[in-house]
View (spheres, rainbow, N blue to C red):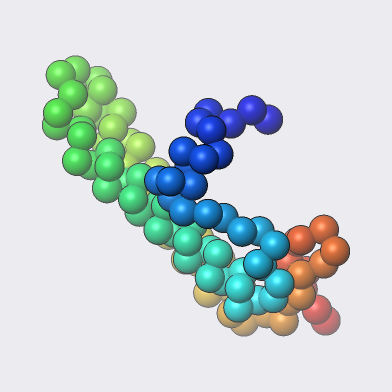
Length: 100
């Protein structure tokens, strides 16, 4: 799928996402903490601009977007907590797979 902004711009704003560095559970958890940071930054951005937009409908929409960012961050935190309890490995396609 086509991205909404060039990769260089996303890296400038959010930092580099090095998927090859995810080799085990610990590095996957660190990458997920990065995802939490992105969601929290997004929520912060929408919270800050919501009262600077002139339209009441747009302010409501900004509040919804901020809430979604907080919700996404919370879901990722739950996934990290669940991941800590599992034995996982990263398969050849880069996916986390539970080891039984």
